[in-house]
Length: 376
Ligand SMILES: Nc1nc2c(c(=O)[nH]1)N[C@H]1C(S)=C(S)[C@@H](COP(=O)(O)O)O[C@H]1N2
Ligand SMILES: [Mo]
Image: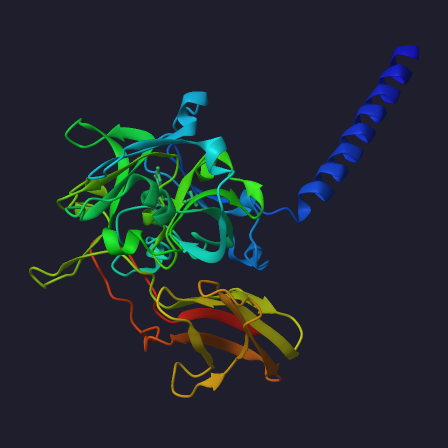
C-alpha cells in the first residue's frame, strides 16, 4: 500500500515534472528558428526564409557554407601575411588591424548555389533552397589600405586569398580554400579584411578572426579564416575558380564563364506555399537584391506574368549593397488557388527571367520568385 502510494506520487511527480519541463521547452523552442541542414561535415546549413526578415541577420541564423571541415584556430592564426609581388612583404597581427582606420559596409552575401534545388533537370551539389543568403554590417580594413603598406609591384595582376581550411581533392592532393581577384577588383575601396559582423567579432564559423568581404560578388569570393594574401603576376588556377564557381553552359562550347557578380534576385517571405483560412487583405512581402547597381522595381503577377503590378519598395537601407524590402497589399476576396510571381529589376537593366539559366553546376539561379497559395 505504502509502496503503491509512493509509487503513484512519484510517478505523478515525474509526470508533472516532465509536463512542466516539456511545456517550458515547447515555449522556448516554439518560435525559435533552426538552420536547415544540408550536410554536417563539412557543415552546410541554410536559413529558413521567413527568419530572414530583420535587416541585420544575427550570426546564429546566417547560412553556413563550407568546403572543408573547420580549421583549428590557435593564437598563431591571428596573423595575416601579405607577400608575393610586393616591395615589402608584411605580417599584420589581428590586434594591430583592430587599431587601424576601419570601414563599415552593409551588404548582401549570397551563395552562388542559392536556390540550386529549383533547377530542372536537378543538379548535383548542395540542394539549397532560398536561404543561403544574409544581410548584415561588416567592419574591417579596406584591403587597398593594407596593400599601400606592402606596395604592389607593377607586375602584380591578381591577388590570391587563402584560408586556413584545407582538404583533399579527388586526386588526393590537399588544397586550401583559396581564390583570387583581379587587381582592379581587389583594390576597390569596399573590399574589406573584415573582423566584425553586426558590431560583434566574427563568429568562428563565419571566418574568425579575419575574413575577406567582397561586396556584389557571390559569397565564394569572401574567403573566411584568412591566412595569406599573395600578389601574383599570372592568373591563379586554383580549383575553386577553375573547376568550381564556373558557369558551364550546356551546348555552348568555349563558354565557361567565371562566377563573379550576383544576379538580380528576390524572395517572397510572406506568404509561403500555404493555405490561408480567411479571405480579405493579405500582406505579401519579401526582399530583392542585385550585384550590379541597385534595385529599381519589384513587380507582382497573379496571372503567370500576363500582367504585372508594382509593389511598394522600402529603400530605408541606403547602402549601395543593401537589399530592399518590398510589399504588396492583396485584396484576396475570392476563394481559390493562386500562383504569386515576383520579379525584380536593377539599374544595370537586368530583370529576373521567367526561366532560369541552367548551367551544369547550378550557379546563379534567379528566375522569377513564386509561391502557391490557397485561399479557403
Ligand atoms: N576559407 C573558406 N572561405 C569560404 C568558404 C570556405 O569553404 N572556406 N566558402 C565560401 C562560400 S562558397 C560562401 S557562400 C561563403 C559562406 O560564408 P558563411 O559560411 O559565413 O555564410 O564563404 C566563402 N568563403
Ligand atoms: Mo557559396
